[in-house]
Image 1 (spheres, helix red, strand yellow):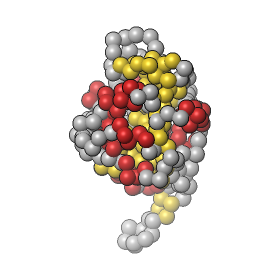
Image 2 (cartoon, rainbow, N blue to C red):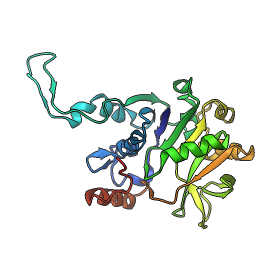
Image 3 (tube, rainbow, N blue to C red):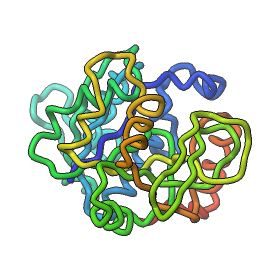
Image 4 (cartoon, rainbow, N blue to C red):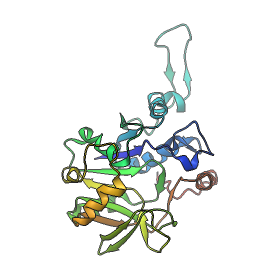
Length: 260
């Protein structure tokens, strides 16, 4: 199974932390938050990643193209070609990472559409955002999705008051409100799963296609959108305060999302 990660947004609310890095590359400890998200999936055996690049995507490419050199001890003779020697092995050696230029101005739905060809042959695929971590039980999520028979399942987490809220009845979504006024309930926390064949009926090939504003509501209208309730830890990085919270948890070795 493959996981698609949306990595192309500008992250305008977090620019006080860094105007140089795209948001998925903001470091939590010594590694980008994107790496932390990938480690969560890899812990459960999902190690085939499709990254939807956009804003400053070349920095994400550079990280993975030079991954081993960035994290391992190395030696080399400056005047000799092919002299590079690595001393450290990594747990990520078997990861497959496909880096796709999905358009700097493309919206979330368009980015997913633009990686469609890399999902050929899949029965299902995972999809999440490049700025959120959780101690999610992925096997339970996948089992819930497959048993539902629906075209899509999203992970529902408790809201912080500024995201698209959803209402759930019997593990099916009955309402989807994009960034409503503060109410109690659940929000879309990412960590989604989709039927890799049927889901494309809800997409169109234009760069203004918004996953949250058009694709998911259409699926809801057809009764094809399910929910997996996650009452454990979840946190996105959308503000400097949230960024600092994750770094403090990591520094204190109290990161709930560290399931590896």
